Length: 232
Image (tube, rainbow, N blue to C red):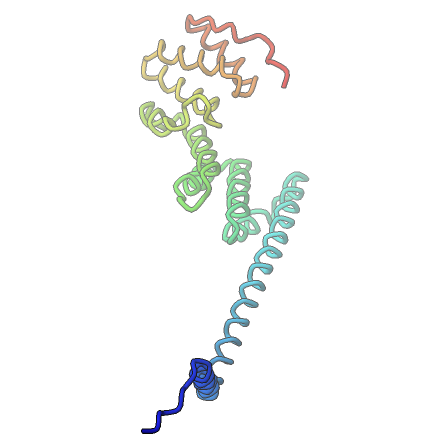
């Protein structure tokens, strides 16, 4: 009886490769238009993203230049356009530009004796969770300092408590305000100890340290902190 022809492994592999090639060719014939459309959309999206990022950078640079010009105008006494210009910049997509514009706007309000408006701006910055923490902390300290006489002492202590710790950037100013609030509460010894801590903290600006040492001394605590600061 005749034997069937031997089908080698090489022959099977060649048939398999030809089949795959034909399937791939048929696939591209059927879906080539969709593939091309997808590539075009990908390139368009990538190009759009690059353009948008560059546009945002250019816009931020222009806004920074505008801020600088506003500062120059205000410094020379020309404040006629500053409020409106700062209000526009306060809508910026750049958090740094937005914060700078808001702080400048509050400064303009203070210069125009509108402490209520300035306090409202500081509060909006401090309460804005989208702002970086350094901006929020600065706004909180400024608002409390501005409204100190109208705030209850316990509210001052509670609001500034997170910042009234050695090592915090605002420890000096926040500590002073807290100590003054403690004095209002009749807690003079506690206030004196806080002033003494401020006076001994090398991270606090020297003018604040000197003032704190003087107040601590007047409250009966000798800090010996009036010596010259160490060279940096």
